[in-house]
Length: 102
Image (cartoon, rainbow, N blue to C red; front, side):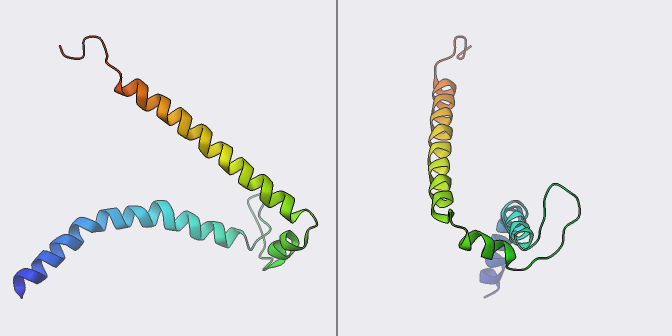
């Protein structure tokens, strides 16, 4: 029983840095974005809580479907361009470099 506990503690100790990293890098910005979506935040440093007003304005706007389509098109082309650039960079890094074996 003790060896199972120590193995579980060891596994948790190894996972802790990765979990903390995920919380800092992913969870906090996601939470902050959700909180900001309920405010009238702009480029000024102060903002007020407006509740669901932002969401009501978006969903009741006449051009909601146009905005959603534009968002998906932008996302598709943005991801495609990043994949092409990333693949080109990976190909360059994988290419044989003169003097590499020296």
